[in-house]
Length: 487
Ligand code: FUL
Image (cartoon, rainbow, N blue to C red; front, side, top):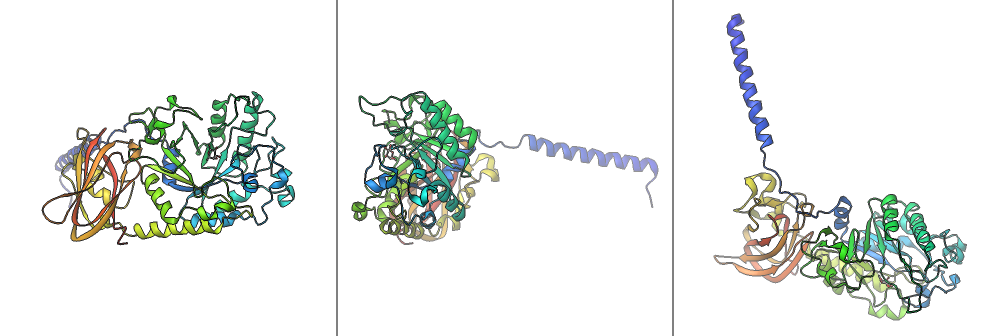
């Protein structure tokens, strides 16, 4: 039975008004919805964010020096020297994958100018060597192996060239850009391009004025996702030492204009510069052996797995990436002592980081941005680095407490900021409690992409992270807790 016509109209009008009011409320709620914290410039680019996630990868110094025992070849070496008899890039990459590395950067050309690919721009290349009858291409075999094993491929290309006849003249810049073009177009995706700042020309040596704008534009044009490394970026900076570590305070920000490739002012590169205008995170380069190139005389001096783990904490654990040089031997294989250490490193890390105890804890905070779930303290212990806990804009300090129903043993925390919003934290501390007082476990300064902090093993039923000072409201993506020694 229908309603009388007029009553029906009134009813419809009332319903319409209710729906309109509800829609208005929903729309208003959406427009006044709490905003995420504004980014604190400078911010990382997409390619830099992807680079941060790479964390740990191999460096391979390989070339004529592998056969002569030199560290810096003279450029006059006979290409006939280059003849790795059992060359197998797949063996290298398999070992790197087992070690937990995510990519490889190869010395496509070191200072001696020898090209590990058949460059048309040089007469000092694999094509002049007896290896594979002059038909070999190290970059091709290595990039294929990387694809097969799921690792990223990168190239080191030394601007300094002791062989090329054009070196020291403006024409060399075109040669170098042309070489870049060859290596960046023939082998698929390249994740990193490494520019070495070294130049050992003596007082009477050749002087090359490098056309960096040309080199950088060439890389951007051909491999827009690749990060470029040098003393001054433009994407990734040298950490200022070749010992494989950053500093406890490590900013991903730097005033790039104050540095250049080959800079003599490398001091500030280790800690970076708080408030620097550019996002240029640090990469730590170090060799597993005393030298960068393989020498059988150094087989007994390969860093142990445990030494490598220490370097890991001081690089990956201090807001930097670690590029560990593992130089193939004259057979063209990774030697056994190097393999052994890499697998020891992996085993120790796997043991230490088996269980994130924070996943079982309840996370709480008094300060919590708008009490909105998107910024809730529970986001620090959900095992995801895409969610984060944040405070309101005016709060530049704050505390998250983890509570367990049963006490746990702990000796290490892993912290991460939501760096897509910039690097913020200046000072933090960690305290543990198993009753009614808090004991200081550790203190630190910067966090950045990742900070690992170890402390004496303790039994705790609660653990608190105090962000004591931050350049803007803290945005903490992760607080992980481990029992390394018990693991
Ligand atoms: C330095 C070079 O001179 C070394 O030979 C090595 O390649 C190292 C990674 O960079 O500047």
